[in-house]
Length: 349
Image 1 (spheres, rainbow, N blue to C red):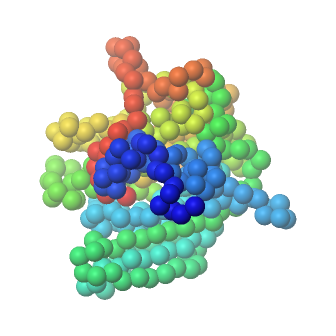
Image 2 (image 1 turned 30 degrees about the horizontal axis):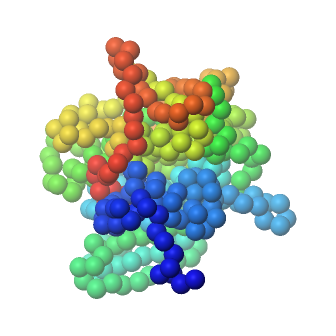
């Protein structure tokens, strides 16, 4: 059978141009993974995890992940494309319980890129890798024609070692699990928007870009029973919870009063017509743990002021029913949080 004879899933026959133009992080990306890549590569629900896990013949368990970074602008308050590439890959490994060890870095450079810009990005990657305790051990460089690359695109892949017997994955989520969130949401996406559009505010909104692996490793070393983890990148908190609920086939309820949003971030979202629940983060994650583990998990998190100092309970897992995500508001009314059908802020990571 030729490639031309293979039929495309109906969903993508209907929306081919929308798919090709979409930036990622919403319903279309979820369909792209579940209807195109996962069936083609035999990945099943593993395609919805932050990293692949596997065992070597001698029994060592490893995690492997890859991601590409096309953020515009390259530099923004609280980070840049280099730190983003390192921290994003480190965090994807941590979300399956792996200790990050080695990274690769592939650079697609636009013709005419100032050497000073490349040097700044590389030095930022070096610093971020040192803080995260990983080594960048291999890489590649390609140059594309002027006007074809927005300066720099970076692909990073990472390998980490898994020392826990826990299966940290969406399918491990159980009814009654408590959902923890490690801080305020929405800062990264708004920091990118401010830098891109030249928006000036009384206070500069900083991205939350940071590595999270040390906190996760401390939980595992402390014996915390973790069922699932997910970092809240493209699509934000609401989309991430929808992906988890769908994979685990559970209902999830979160509390609006428990979700922190900085006042300036909330104000900008209101001005721009954005919902902070769907705005990307680069240093925030949710954890699903049994209720008996909550106090210990929060106590350990307090030892990591930046990554876990604001750790709090934001919701619970309900029964296995319709795989819905809802939020109870300040006056007790429930709002259904659907998966984002488009991208609020394109090109933010």
